[in-house]
Image (cartoon, rainbow, N blue to C red; front, top):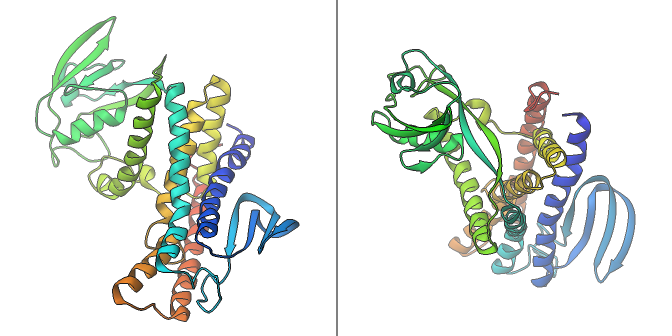
Length: 357
């Protein structure tokens, strides 16, 4: 993958996702009667003022990343018609609408993607370690895992889930070898019986490989799959720390990534789509990033939408709002901390790239 794929994917994937997020805020603000001073394509500095409609300036800006919405009176409740002066219901609606737009966008992308059909993958055994449970069971390098514990093994993730959920218990594993299906009984080791990071519970290394088949779905099934994928992404994000502690994922898999790392992954998805003439990888990746952006923005972190929503909820509980100056200071400190973390994560993704160039 060249750097040009990364740059192109950055514009193709991240820009629409960020723009959709800001468009959600914009539409919700207008529906709530909140004045919007500016809706910009790209980030400042401003390149040109396109036009003005009502109280809103529509602008084109020099940094080609998504866009932004500047509501009137964002932190000042004395500004008539501004965000801070609006009712709690209007503020909650406007603040959460960005994430909502991201989730809706992801639903549409995934719905299309599943109707096109994802490629069928199977976990292939790359290596079997000596005296491991897998070797005792008779598993061999090159085996294709078809089923484990009665579940279709359409990814290595399914294998890991069943292995860790059934430590110390015999598992029925169906593999495909030399033109025939073979049923094996494998008993994963329990925690403490193996060295984490070296062998794991079974002593095998597996990798997902495409079979060349596709599995398209009808519109109703595709919509259900789209919704389930969004739930899985959010649930997987919440469980990541636990999975890391339990050894189900590596520290590298659980590490936070910046716009640099996301662009690298987007570049790989775009390249796969172009070389394989298959839109599924790019649509699926864009949807996952859209969900991740929406979910992250809802976290109760100062300066993010979720942080502002938290202040509105606190106001609803205590019956009066926190002083605007105090809230503004909290968001300012939060923004500085987030910018510092962002710089560190960007440096990490440059020094230790997700996908080496």
